[in-house]
Image 1 (cartoon, rainbow, N blue to C red):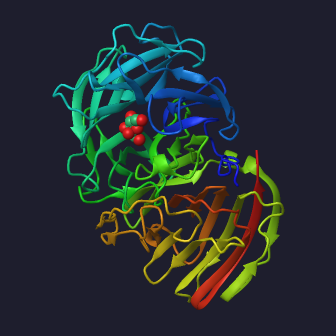
Image 2 (cartoon, rainbow, N blue to C red):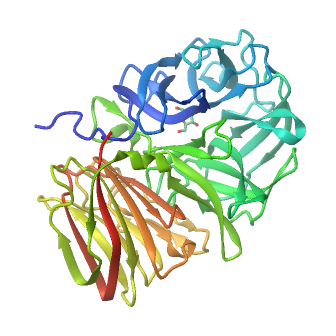
Length: 501
Ligand code: FRU
């Protein structure tokens, strides 16, 4: 008989009880990162949405605080954002924290509301004249406001998901909003439903004189492997309209796993752009084999832009602060892998929380990778498929998988023009996900793999590929097997870290 909290991650953010989905209102102020989140305090399935609240000084250690914004007569408190009002635009004082969220109910529909805090985000007062924004055309799906300061216009801007578009608005006082434009119809994966936008400006290849705007669009459905996922569009913004660099059919993915959703970024972090993904998928989020609580956030990720083959892509890498989790470490001698090499014990007293870092040089092999497994024969495979130029993670035999239902994943175009689909599809959970290796320079692949009880996050070459997948092994994977097909690969600079708080 298992402890009902058996799968609770060791070093990922989870609610102490209740249900959690999207990260909300991410904001940094006075040395604290505020992580609000979609929260049901009354049960471990979706419902009664509040904004739960946790704070951290380092993005690694989280302290749970009381829910900050509770459900009210306007309905659920859905997703949104928080800004620091440096110039007192709203009249609640300099540096007041102003939260924007969607109130959602059958009676009032989805409408944008505001609340303010003058005690560093502990408590919020709802604006007495809520809502501040309703859809001009009666749209049903109109939610998840992201507010940001747009320097050239000296105004606040809001981007809101509106069915298959993102709508832009501007304001001087954060209360009265003027419609500017919309973007999205026909762009990216189809069919889709836009949710949880973000809009950020980032230097290309680290050049501060060459910045591009990126629209982050969370879509449900639309994930190449079924369910929900995060795409993004790179382009320019003139203060009114967003123009995307690529054709509507081009889809770029922020993460190539199946458990990465509702990803948005912190406000007020200066030159850094730090995103927090919710680590699940709406196809099965409510039925994962967990009881006392449900939902975890992925490691916070630093976003940056890089160029590959004349295209601009966004890299997402685990923030450097995660290095503070490394407790014990071990180096593994460089090895030539022909057929297989086994490492019997990954870490001593393994609780299923560790990091594996290595360079894989596939050489002439057709396939090179590793399998993490336990004494019950449950395993997750992570490999480079050089023939099809893919990084694959296959969790079909990873442990508990039968809770997944069966719905055919969408067969859709990936941004390299090829059809995408899951690998070894058995049900919505038991399958493999993949990413195109064309995003990397090739020859050598640097893999940084984080395992934490029920999750695997893979970062290749500093986040050019990120892949996040849940797993439910009935005991921790404590062994590792490197294997190749059709040639010899080298595994170099390998380090194993036991991770803990
Ligand atoms: C995304 C989402 C949002 C909504 C929230 C409700 O996962 O559907 O669009 O605001 O979850 O909990």
